[in-house]
Length: 212
Image (cartoon, rainbow, N blue to C red; front, side, top):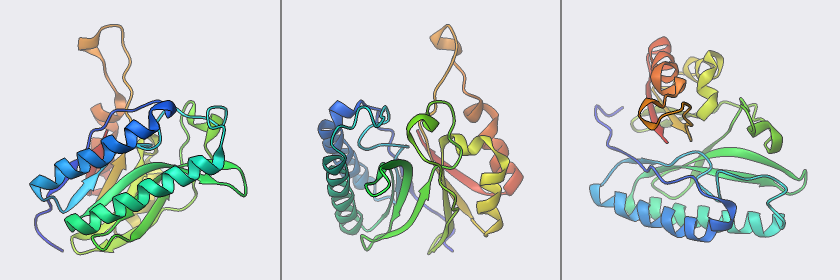
């Protein structure tokens, strides 16, 4: 395990499905920009592609939907290899056979290979309207320690982070799109930011890296 890890959290905006092509170019552009600082790991938010706001009613062509997502993944893999870094990417994953969607996180290594995939387990709020829940909690060995991933509201439950920690995870990646609530912009809050994620880190003695 290395003593230092340089990370770039790529805070891209949550977009609509109709903006997916513009979103794809923006994701690739911000990866290229982040590469200038030579990070060992880049982390993107939850559902960075094709969109955060999505449902089966919006996706009219599942085949085109999957094809465009696979094309982006291929380009991100090329960049991971080019920049010799790990990239954690949040996508909407399609299972064409079962006709279901997953809110997924991929971890790509510096050789451009997918080495881990996590599917959001705790489907909070409107998530459950169009996503199916994941049931596996993989942890992968890297040169800077064992890495696990979870997605946004998964951090609300102690058990999910605990499952990853019990497998020896040193670092957890939280791909998220945190929302805020309140009547005035200056007083907006989010319980995950304020105390849930810090508590998960404290409970399990792990580093948590969040891209929002």
